View 1 (cartoon, rainbow, N blue to C red):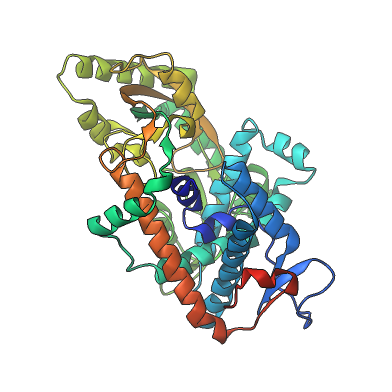
View 2 (view 1 turned 120 degrees about the horizontal axis):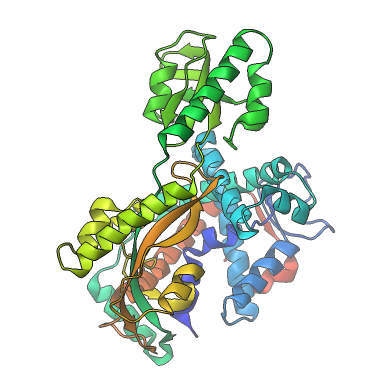
Length: 457
């Protein structure tokens, strides 16, 4: 059994299953199992037969072995997930609307990018509006995040010692996986700086909107729905509900607490772009507001300036005047890789990534490079800094540091990967122990067809 591959794909099995967009619906029907395909019920949450089949097929598509035992294990984890949702209600474990919206925006942005960065193309593909797609995903994402929160609480104190890693390694010694080609590669990213003329264009546009709104020619809500580039609020007239202080960027909240109720601010700059903000109400550390967000556009000249900046940095690195790692930590605009010295890391935080799991653009770039090379500045597309829905060009240089040939997993070369597998197994055992303790607190019923899975035993 490819246990390391299985455990890596598990990434805590409960969460992985729920990222398949499994439909989780509360039911008012008092019947335990009905003819509509319900195979398990946990309080008001259900598992459909189609949920199980989709999760099982996805598991197989990742190159894992199947069989009835595997299907039973997947069903058990789905039931555990539903139990976590039910227990979250009992224990008042809550995920904030702000966190859900941020997660939803990132997810939708990723989907849009996968279809070429075109919202209209996404709507055509699904035959529905973007807002309809987001509404369907929102409840699912809230439940996914609730399960993650519960899981974090359950496994918060779980860790593995080096001795436990060695014991785990010995337990799988007769089925060690073959690790495919790995590479160590990094990047230094430079987001183009927006020129002054473009910033002034946006400021002038927002000032004109403010004038029209204050003169009664245009309502704030209509202006937000027509012009705002904030996907989380534009469709709602730019409005957010009651928000606790500390949830928005300092520039936004500083403005909210410096204007009067009903007042509209002058354009305010943040990492997201420029905001026109109206305070609707305020009480202590909470406030209601709405805004119109416009992000200045990057020009080709701005991108060329970024590439020239990186070209100079590349020269310094090649001359040994500056190390790649130091340059990445100090100057890279990509926060996800900068802290690791610019390197891409696996799920264990180790800067050795399976070649087939790398971003396709990075993979194709290093495929034309020799080990030790640093590429010339390359243009690529990213979500704009601070936002998630709007794409822009940026520049980067790529360092192809090392290549590791395919090999059988071993403690010397793959300790962190094996450690992570051992940790996930231990976390899974902890979750199962939690399930045995928590199952008596809620109503659980399993279709007799799956009695051989012995989920309740």
